[in-house]
Length: 463
Ligand SMILES: Cc1cc2nc3c(=O)[nH]c(=O)nc-3n(C[C@H](O)[C@H](O)[C@H](O)COP(=O)(O)OP(=O)(O)OC[C@H]3O[C@@H](n4cnc5c(N)ncnc54)[C@H](O)[C@@H]3O)c2cc1C
Image (tube, rainbow, N blue to C red; front, side, top):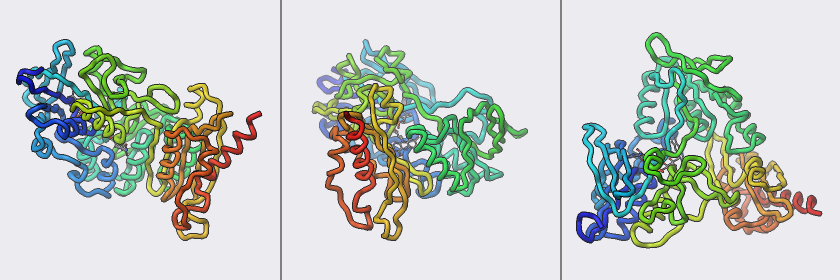
């Protein structure tokens, strides 16, 4: 118990999706007389949508504050003692306390806890190369980053942008910069953009991006960032080429932010994320929970832990943690690996395993790829889409789906996400009772066309 008699104290580290969802849910279940909640956030904002940053930078969302779901004042009015601009610098597990530092004054103090939530998120990868800290080089992890990028875009002398990395943040930022009137080059280490897809599907993204006027440079490792006499960024260099740039955006992935957890001796997995049980409790620690981008999650299709840094999971983790820390009971069973994104009018979606994931998991499988349309072929606005599907040999169990297409393509992946969660076979999927009318889909939805073809492939290969 804490110093305040029978009242317990819940301490939360990290004031965004996972942390503040946990704090809010715990508060719903327990009032301030039963549970004191102290939340530490080192930044200026709480409960903001990093997912919206590309659309704010691109101009679709006009105000930064539209991305803030709940302000610090709103949290405080609900009885959460929120300490902004305060960074936790140490977790003392044996002493059940954390040491926090005021970012502006440097003042430090200890706060004891009965229950602790670690929701420190992820850290963007920032390669250690010359010029990476030059003015004009930007990450896009926080609202502060987004504001700094917008300031650069307003001041920039020219209109050439280089995006380093072609994952979903890279491609979304390419779109944002095009919308701001920039000439965009995407420099990517992989053979094709969107490495969360198989390369054959990534190739479709590559071709579509080139069709949008984006210069795509694949198989290219950025080695340094060149600056001009004024110290500002001037170009991005690989071993054999230079790409002129007035602004550079880095989107090369993230790692779990578990520096504190590691120093405290808490269990980390293969990807450096905290390991939890299904109630999101840190393994081996009754009174410590962790969630969001700082944890590894169970991949329900592959049956092993992965690091998947997505807001959709962070919010659910927070809900589960808050319920448990508030005295209730909830679990997070795991993920099937669903993600959707877009670049201009191209929609990109995936769920489940890629070919290399399936191989790594020791599975044998069939793959099929089909072309179809988003609406009945004769209905105005019908646009082509490609669906790739993986099914397990013999059993016919659905293993994964990837979709590339135009409007109406991306969210079809949710059909496959449900089928994966339910452990359906591709044969069972062919009979799914999906809605149909010509403005919404062909009479056989593209996902069902792929399922039929996959079911046939499984039948033909099974002796
Ligand atoms: C540009 C961009 C686009 C995205 N788009 C999507 C999308 O379309 N769909 C999707 O599902 N996800 C998307 N995401 C991912 C999503 O934003 C994250 O998964 C989500 O924010 C994770 O929430 P979190 O609470 O775990 O971590 P974070 O949001 O990173 O929050 C962690 C917080 O902890 C604070 N913190 C860390 N260490 C300390 C400390 N020691 N002391 C005090 N405070 C600390 C940090 O300042 C931060 O505010 C996007 C992310 C970015 C950057």
